[in-house]
Amino acid sequence: MSPVISVVLPVCNEEQVLSRLYERLTSVMRGLGEAYELIFIDDGSRDRSLTLLKELREKDTTVKIINLSRNFGHQAAITCGLDYAKGDAVVVMDADLQDPPELIPELITQWREGYDVVYAVREKREGESVFKSVTAELFYRVIKKLARIEIPVDTGDFRLLSRRAANALKSTRERSRFIRGLVSWVGYRQTGVKFVRQERFAGQTKYPFRKMLKFAIDGITAFSFVPLQMATYCGFLISGVSFLYIVYAVLQKLLTNRPVTGWTSLIVAMLFLGGVQLIMLGIIGEYIGRIYEEVKQRPLYLVDETFGFESEPGEGSRR
Ligand code: UDP
Ligand code: MG
Image (cartoon, rainbow, N blue to C red; front, side, top):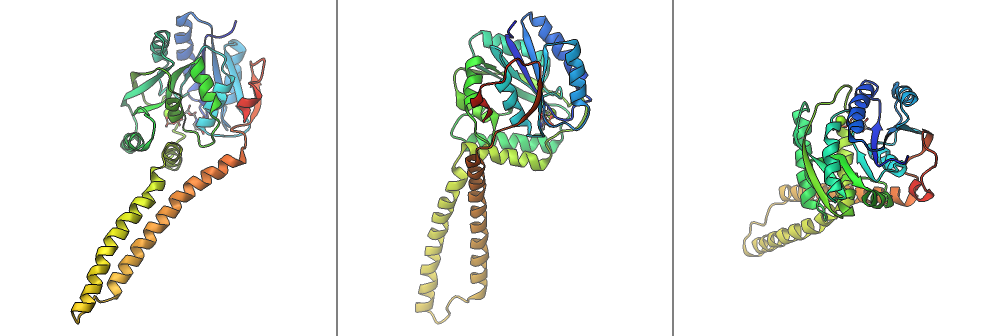
């Protein structure tokens, strides 16, 4: 029986949460009375996650597993799951129970109403550090200002996609993946459902500050040219100000016998401009690095082995 609902779950070292996740998810899915599949993507776990998943699969064939050849990251793992998902609707959620499975019926109701994308909006975050909440909140507002498309605030990757939205998302194969932005880019009819983001059930976050920062820059560079244009704005501003200063300095020299004394103004201008130029070079570097990643055209992920899939996804989706 082909599944109506696919649930995509990226897993990286989640041995402590898997059995609880399976219980809660399964009781919700059984309650729906539709055929479903649970696609777990093991993203290079070094703990017992894969073994536990295989044990679950022995009891229950709705559990399907894709084992990636190494850790490719959260966004690549989700992409892989979407490539393999067969359902008419695909739900993407984290495996750590921060995204409550109990919200799935509500997502499905909206899908049946005719929406192609139903995203879950975090109304509140429980048990997360002040630092994480504040930086996340700030980030969503900054990217909303900068991006050329409308990206809903406080929305993670927990969402439902209709078949055509999932296919559209699959057709985007860019490397610096910021999936929540790509989903907005896809368009169609989208709506949000509010939920309270719970505390991680067990284990630790796989997004330390360094990775969060990279993810944020991925998102901004993928959806905005504003950082690049900043060089132009700064250039005009600084040229304007320095023109006024040039007039002042020349007049002072010509009209008085006290020319502007040199060292301080020179060193200030030099250090300031040097800093601005290095920052701008760095910003250009961020974009060039991403262009380089893109032209290499490496696959987004490599699969080691799969359990429970009769056929591989089409060639196109591997690239
Ligand atoms: N994850 C993954 N690969 C990674 C990092 C994370 O598959 O390289 C999974 C992780 O197992 C979890 C989800 O992505 O199911 C979200 O990660 P996490 O909960 O650590 O992020 P946070 O909620 O703290 O932002
Ligand atoms: Mg989490």
